[in-house]
Image 1: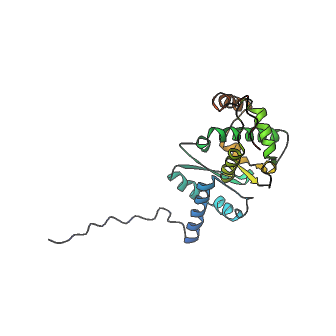
Image 2: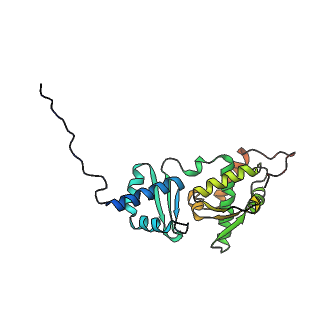
Image 3: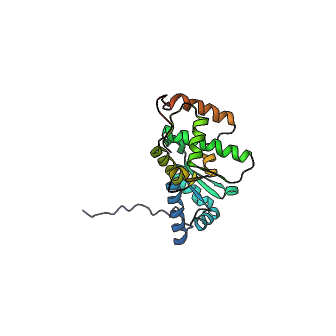
Length: 212
């Protein structure tokens, strides 16, 4: 009996218009977006890949969509954002991380309304703001705050500049945070804050503030 070969019909490459250089750039763009959530042009080493991706938006969007992500190009802020279609990045945060992100969002929004173009604060400032805005909620421990800020830094929601004394470390809040927590009005923020106040661990009357 003859061995017949049943070869599948050849299909053209999905990205037929890409040469090898563009394929490498596209791969690098998607890896950065999936790992960091955003590409910020002003970050060290990001200008070249940001410029390439900005010129090839259709390719980046199409491939990201195939694996379940939405990509948006926020040109006024020189950043590219990539978020899951089914589950927003904020839903992956712990309650503690979500509370810290809420406070950062409020501080950023307030500063922008007052005319700021760059919003920076220290970890000590953030702890004080947390206590004022989420009264009754247990403040993050030093380790909890550090972990949360490192997560936000990795996802390009903030830039964290570490200091020898952790409480003196500088946090620059990036516009990415406003995009992943898209409250339209302050009352929307207040409703969410009230929910966290009810559900987050409460500050014990016997415990002091979180370690800074």
